[in-house]
Image 1: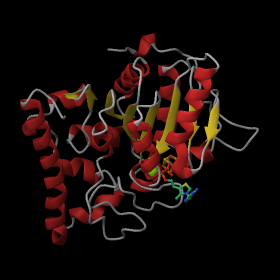
Image 2: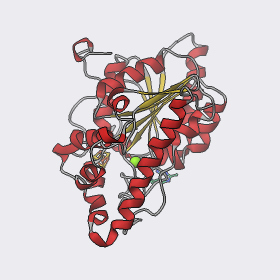
Image 3: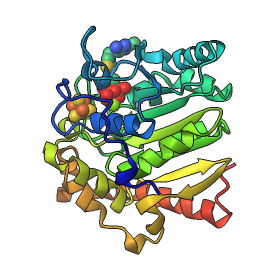
Length: 305
Ligand SMILES: Cc1ncc(C[n+]2csc(CCOP(=O)(O)OP(=O)(O)O)c2C)c(N)n1
Ligand code: SF4
Ligand SMILES: [Mg+2]
């Protein structure tokens, strides 16, 4: 297990940028920089990070960063990696894309790169909506969540991108959370140690879009994991393993009540009204069914394919 002490004190994402206070994306970028000690190239499609990264020639990023069209990140990263290799440079290329840019608009390029087993790391920071353009729902928005395009709560469940990528039989797929930074750092390092396509899906609680105070960002992220609404795992060579805090939560009795997570955010406030008890139960069923699937997978030795 990585410890805070062994992380470099060097910062690769500098202060003075345009993110909201309490932004999970900047915490994730900070930990990514420390995990790889600044030796990587970032590929960033449209999203909050495009704004945070600033306008040329000013940027808080101390690593080389390439902006791409929304749909193209995994294709651009594939080309960059090939170009670096052709020059004899063994430098990790890391896509840093939002959930809209991953689950919806970038899915085709992502699938193509995964199918070709391109030697890149793809990280989706999942703030569960198109936050940069005004909180529109994405395929990754969970059921019941308010967004500006789902004013009475999203009717559909979220698209399970980690498992979609795993179905490409790539060497490494993981979920992580900005609220558990060392677990994330460990997964980034593991990904960087492997050849081929690596995917990390990073849960990123967004105070602006999820309607909670900026100071609560890490607490909300931890509640997501503690209540089982977000699960930390990795899939290596087709075998799933629970990691970090989630490893102790297979037994439902050990998870905190889901309401604690929902109550912490304005986007779920309507679910807690008595007349919406049926919606709350539907959201609870999503969480329970996901854990039931994990339990069955682990019973057969963790093999997902
Ligand atoms: C092809 C295209 N469509 C729409 C946009 C407008 N746009 C810019 S950022 C953004 C939202 C991105 O959402 P997500 O990928 O989840 O990242 P987040 O903003 O949440 O960080 C949209 C729709 C664009 N730049 N390009
Ligand atoms: S909207 Fe959310 S993800 Fe975007 S900059 Fe603000 S806090 Fe960060
Ligand atoms: Mg988003």
